[in-house]
Length: 94
Image (tube, rainbow, N blue to C red):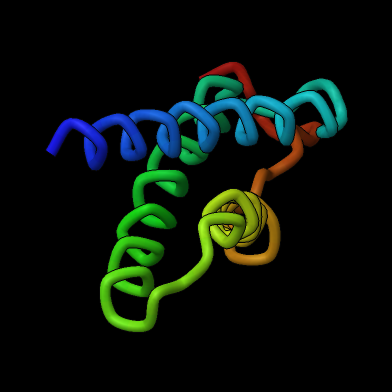
């Protein structure tokens, strides 16, 4: 049980780190900078769940976990991620 919790915690931490790296690659001025590590954390947890099911059923190799984490975080912060609206010259006096 401790091994599962250790791998779970490491996957979550690596996901948060990967999300933070995605924040560094974005152009400055985007809103909600704390969202990147949080989405990375959730992506790492989800990737670990996928890995655990694959390892239990098919005997997936260990090196698959970091790849799954990076792909999950990239997917959630990239093409399927939140869309940021740029602040235009709208009426901001309200």
